[in-house]
Image: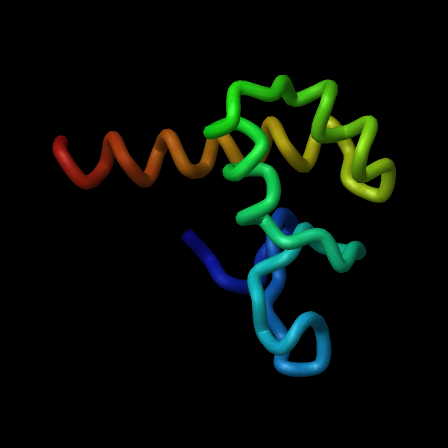
Length: 72
């Protein structure tokens, strides 16, 4: 996955370089933690209104492509 893209960004000046959703200070790992805990995308978005549904969907689509590419 691209470290600096239209979906995620990683910069030492923002959250110490933790990958975050572009334009926010919300770590991508937070979404993964929500999903792992059985929470919905809507629950995540309610808790982090600076992240858009489009960003979440784009991240999940890109992650899926990366995973499929690893085994194809």
